[in-house]
Amino acid sequence: MSAQHPEPEMLLTPSEVATLFRVDPKTVTRWAKAGKLTSIRTLGGHRRYREAEVRDLLGGIPQQREADR
Amino acid sequence: MSAQHPEPEMLLTPSEVATLFRVDPKTVTRWAKAGKLTSIRTLGGHRRYREAEVRDLLGGIPQQREADR
DNA sequence: TAGTATTAGGGTAATTAGGGTC
DNA sequence: ACTGTCCTAATTACCCTAATAC
Image (cartoon, rainbow over all chains, first blue to last red; front, top):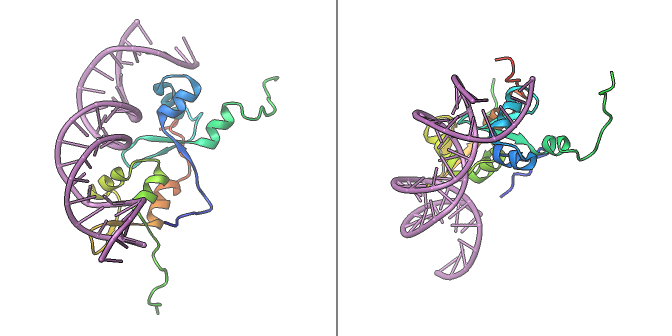
């Protein structure tokens, strides 16, 4: 096989994201609907999530917060 | 006028498409059966998929906020 | 020609979507 | 405002064997 493109783009299923955050998969769906989480749809309508984005949100690198305003 | 083969038409195997969408290869087969995805058949009956179409379905329209729908 | 991985089929569990409610 | 749960319908995942791809 040979399909190594410059865009691997690893995706996670709703249940996987839910497990990482320790929430119900339904909650992950709400985050997607609210635009808080980027979602990619399968052709059947199921959502897939970007692994990199999830990892960032999980606190991989605590970036600057602008919560003081 | 027109060149004979302007583009070589890159094809992807079922497993490659499945990896990109983070689904099972069988699911890709169902999409082809349902007419949601164009499939080219090998002489032995195996399916191949157009890379351009797959990439278009994956990221053609980046991320559309579901919040405003 | 042989060996290994992948795919096509078909069937049956497991997830997910969506709305609604607590 | 946020999350977990109940419900139904739809989609997807996993099981198998035989055929194809390389």
